[in-house]
Length: 398
Ligand code: C2E
Ligand code: MG
Ligand code: MG
Image 1 (cartoon, rainbow, N blue to C red):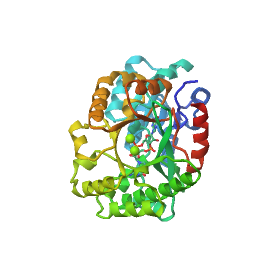
Image 2: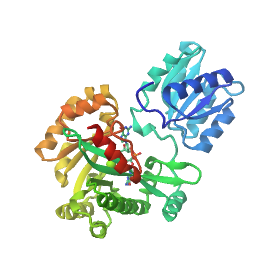
Image 3: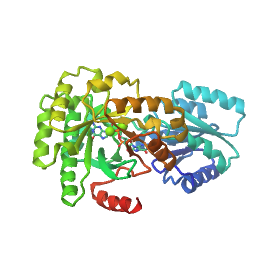
Image 4: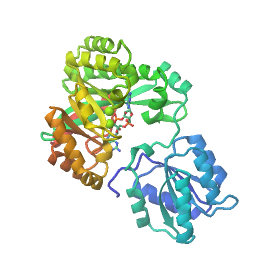
């Protein structure tokens, strides 16, 4: 087995040889645990599948196909705005392949490697190593249309999953982050990457944000009644924080669900600090004064500046998962991470490491002094019902 989880990949294999299609499918399934595999034996079929499924995020493409050659197909795929990973399969010479690689880059395709025919199982390994380093390429699909988002809000198709967070030193289960999903009639479960940005272009994001607060606080009360006392973190879009009534609505919900203010944490992103922040700051400060906690999310993702930390009433700094997803990457960025950690500690801000995917990283973040961790190594986002069983199992392990 490969260690990392690749089961979230939706793969498209394009080759006119059935034996290659079968061989690659088998490796992907047996070695990498991938079950969502589409195959196409022509360019027409391939483009249809990408268009129709809308969620392909890894394509294996044969360069030598009858009728359309692989180069033309590269161009067509880029015109479909395919944003997922691309692997080239070919029996042609290395020289041709390197010029194809250049082309793939020119078309802004996320090329991650070539499989030379005849291929062997071990050839897949370096390619899969490159997957998962950059979350922005995960969801290949284009964002949803406004009407699809409106329909989901109206039909109550916004669902919330919860990802556990643990304290590193004691390994105690301390809280969950609420993460939304959308149920889509054709696409099934859609990840927030495919609709949050679009929703943020209009007021739709306010509806989504408030729906997530309400649902997750409702679940918090259920857990509480069942004897589980954990914190709840909810992501708030800057557009929602800009609404003059935001703080009042949250305070009202706290009352409705008899939730102590310090059990709620609002995750905000840096953009709150970048744009016109007056209304956001008013809302956040009002809530903070009542005891609601504030976390700065995705710290380190884009040009984050440390001075900005002082402008917000912060309790937590969430170090972006790009630091931690790969162990080597983490080692490489240790000095940067340490600077953030020591500044946070001076400002009395606790730190959360996001994207902890394996035991090495878990150990490392403990050693460098992060306070809390969240990531697939601990748990994936799970449904509200699964939280109590998960907590029991976690406690029995630690
Ligand atoms: P975020 O707030 O930084 O959430 C963490 C994301 O990292 C989640 O993705 C989570 O599933 C993922 N993640 C957690 N552990 C690991 C790991 O070990 N490895 C990897 N590779 N990923 C990990 P998700 O649920 O797809 O959410 C993506 C983003 O969408 C969130 O990033 C947040 O910015 C936004 N979002 C999610 N739910 C909401 C919401 O209710 N409201 C708003 N406004 N934004 C939301
Ligand atoms: Mg978050
Ligand atoms: Mg984050």
